[in-house]
Image (cartoon, rainbow over all chains, first blue to last red):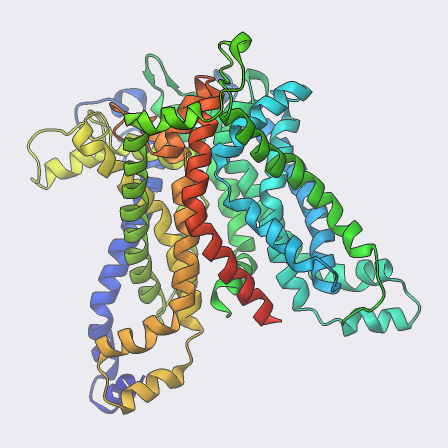
Length: 288
Length: 294
């Protein structure tokens, strides 16, 4: 940072600083255009009328913007159905995964027990298995026990896949809360459960919410299992989106409208949760 | 913190998570191993029987298996490599002070939280041979004279698919590396300045060594994710044209869809073994870092 101090001494320090930073800013803008253009394009496509979509010239802003695709999405295609299916699967997954993970994270953070290291590795290794390795036997198993093509198949799968990272995140957050907090409560006569519920949990709420957002987003976004484990009646949004690609062509207007609707809740959640999520995510890699 | 007396509580607390993981991960993995040793084809359920290593032998003779393996190596090598390069660039750009940095940082992460299906489909539309915006942009810039059916011809399909996965992975690398950059103590740069290091030297002598661990962990994690990813390729090309974009994961998925579960399991196990080369060092590092943090 000595360079900056030196430039202060010279004349027009602000102009100099701006000129110096300019190539960086240009590069950053180029990068952002690359990263964000597909979203812009998806949105523009969703508000184009049919004839402009498949016209001879490509327009970068619709000449006659219309929300027809959105209307058709709900009236003709009944997009509400997959939305509700996704909401059900993602909400139940979030509740189950958080409960189970919170219990385990508490054990890992607050107890030193035989096999602790072993069990921790067991949980972490869980996500290393290829999705497709589990997909096939699970398909056979779920068929056998009769929950294939029900929301339970997805809820069970997504709960399992989100447990390792949820435990990892929650364990990290718990480790940051000193043990003395609970010990003080326990000296005052509370038992462990009371100390946890009354002292720790309220302080942990923002972290639980961030972890929950991660679980919800994972369940909301997942495609590979959803396409194998659901049928017409309970398919989730990702499968419904793919279904716009039919034998006779692609309904790009409705597809992009559905895409816009899908991504809005995820973005809202992410913006609220991102600070803690990023903290938890990077802690493991940056420490040590 | 050390508790001397045996307590059943920690075991009871981890039991629910453990049960679910055994039922949905470890049991199916054993199941997959079992299926890979049988002629397990749901289209011919009467012929399901133990066949030993026949499926593995078949995979070794299957030209599509070797092609898919090669595609996986290229997909991961080029994909993750470029994600790293551009992610690092973005992290360095975001590590400067400027107005609205917080918002720019959040917005640039959006591709990371976008569903894989949507990524595949958005880019499929961008790459479209007739109405695609990429063709239009290239035509307007005068870089091409005829529209290119990016996803429909073998020569351009695989590069297009890789471009998409690069796009998806840049934000994650940037996020991790940015956190690493912010953890580098200012004194290190001051010391380098005193020693007369220039910007390039500072980058290679201070920045890169300080981020060694972050780079290592993030890269391994990305390799595992990218190698396992099905949704992006499947929604772009479904592995075609003529299998030119079929990685091992996509091949297994396609085989699973044809209900030849024995052979699909065999290839999935081979993929898992290959990935163990990456997963084991990753887990070791992660665990060591976590224990040291205590």
